[in-house]
Length: 397
Image 1 (cartoon, rainbow, N blue to C red):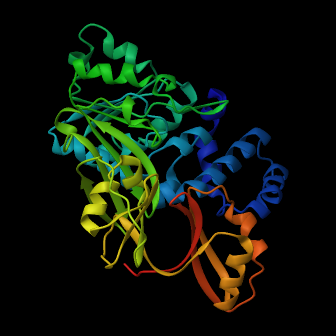
Image 2: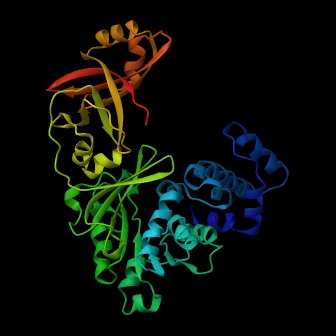
Image 3: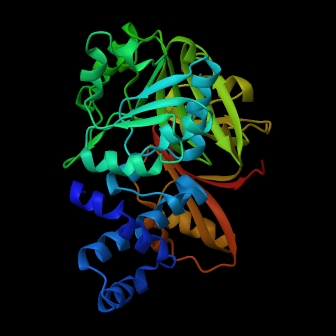
């Protein structure tokens, strides 16, 4: 978004038009835009307002009812922390005794909003002018939060900056995407991860979001590295230092049905062995954090293969850190064998999970030609160097 468009949608006329729009509908957008222009609305304002209406609809999963009063950029929405997780970030700063934090890369202001809502003062830096205007709108309800259009690293490194700003904590969410796509190497973040972590010399209480696929070797050993999942989807990883760290090493935070479950411990690999009566799929945050071995210990389980993150045991155990299944049938994988086994079970709908095997469920499903009345779950994986198909039954949590 260019600054002129940002100024347009943050103007009184722009906001009035955006707020007057009905709930967004792809099928009605073109007609509605034409009606607004025919009624005399400026074409550029209409286009910008319709874009905001679409983005507000897309933002509801992250921001809930707050999305209705917010403004967005496409990139800002994609990278923004969902509000429930941003609240957890803010809680760390509050519980560590911080009172005024510097948000180095505020984007559209999601993390600054959560911090402000918990009573923290925030200096929200944003280098992009248009995004800074959007953030200023989104943070308008909190007078203790200042949006600054400036280079945050350059500002903080200047003499006496920390004292002048009065900040006692730092948060950063570096950009991990450019025109060519996602940037997985922390050196390619903007700003680079090493540059952000160097600010610990100024203020030890520092938190920084990183890509969930970050290599473990790129993480300093004296930090807490936490991977977070929400209802089965890994949404972020973050590094925490000083009093913000709840422990040192790798942790996982699994949020399911509104409840948060913490896991920490050793990243040693779990032992492997033969398939038992039950198979467990660890949560993505557990896998990313390398804590599969901790869950194996909890379940009295082992891996089905040294390189596959499925656990197996002979006694069912309830855990928030893995989804369990009862094994009904195991067969060497082939489309023909699997189709025949599912036909015998009168299966018409199949949920396909796979790990360690180069198969696309969307392509496999029609090849099975299922016509039954029942539903089944199939796990396609590798055990003992061979591809196997497991017909399983989900355990209720």
